[in-house]
Image 1 (cartoon, rainbow, N blue to C red):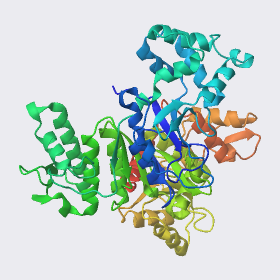
Image 2: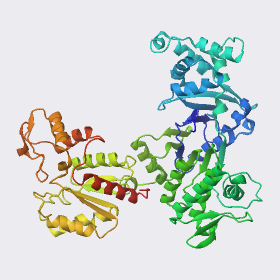
Image 3: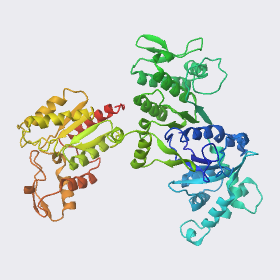
Image 4: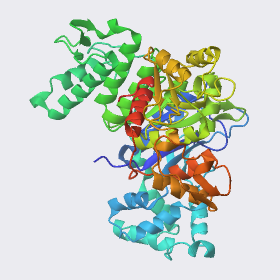
Length: 595
């Protein structure tokens, strides 16, 4: 099993558009991390910094950057000429143990280091990580810990208030234990010496860059980049590895699996000819050079192949959305997450890349004090970022599938049932629930005027991927739907991009098991005496089904109480499970997600 990375974020200032006094922080980073923002905001500078400098301090633990003296530093009156680096680690016992484990220190010291990392000296506004600061001497390339930060941390740790909440273990004893195991002499500043010997930069991954220009070049290319140059010879080794290496053969098959997904051809595969001068694609009985399949297909396959050839790296990718349809963008992210061992830092200005729960995201913008980086964690953060990228609210908020329901209680139930069946589908991302009450069609139970039905059906113009959920309002199993509902079903069934669901009972509340509904009503309305028998074709919330107060039960309030008590163990009455699975399948298809 691959170990979780120790360093899950980095920050810096003093490079190109980063001229502010404090490092701008990128992270926490999941396996795929997006840096998103408008043109000229500084996204590419983050990738350049990572590729140019982050790999170097890990080499032999020398703590030095050979290229620091030739840095492209800001020329600004407000810039103090200093290059600063911060590395982010999770402030938890697991990270503390991972840092101490290589040195054979007693595990009881793990908690001491954990509590050091949780001191305010390592905190940054809006971040859950502990940020370790380094100063860089640009002339020598020397990388050194910020002594003042560790002095503040030691002071905070040893205060009386802090000791009430942490183990009573002197920081000095932690450092001394470390020094004894390392055969070191006592120093006057044991904590900073201890921190320096931990050699945090050694945990930085090797960084590779796949830039914005991606094309196949033959094996004679001298370059070592992974944008297509020299990729053919590496793929040839995977296709025909020495001694039939199973691991390499598996990698080649994973690339072919992605090719089949992109081309929507279950028999498609790539092939490297004997001449090692091109990538050929076999598909639908034809064999063509990869470049003949179109720029988008060409580029996305190069990206996936290069990411598969590399292992356990931090791979920086410049704007993979160039020439890629949104469907290919999402398929690429899913492939990187599932089939490769690398971590990814991706610069993008595509909102379609944000339309996923596969990546963590940083919002990059250029302001008066240089490039500013902020985590995009909440829906409101993503909304602001999408607006900056030039997408209208209607492009983003409506999602790829609209589910039309009669009212708020229907939304509460359906959202909960979708989550139980398919937790990967997210409201506001993969689907939007909207109400069709009011002037559009307020009384579906009646024989509505034709004009209202026509207006309702025309809602498909807003979003072709449309679901309509309707209460049957049937009072018996032999009853018939109203002409309006029957016509809506008839019209929408003609369109493969539409889907209808009519409840098996009188209303959507009939799907709620009697005991669950009784518990919810008693919880919300202690003074109400509920008497409904559980009949399929009677309104469970009709005022005749309870006595006491209030006279009328609020459907939305009852629905909220129901879903709070509806877990995986609750039975699915009537056709409910079948109907919800059909709904989630439709939503996945609308979002081009695998079923």
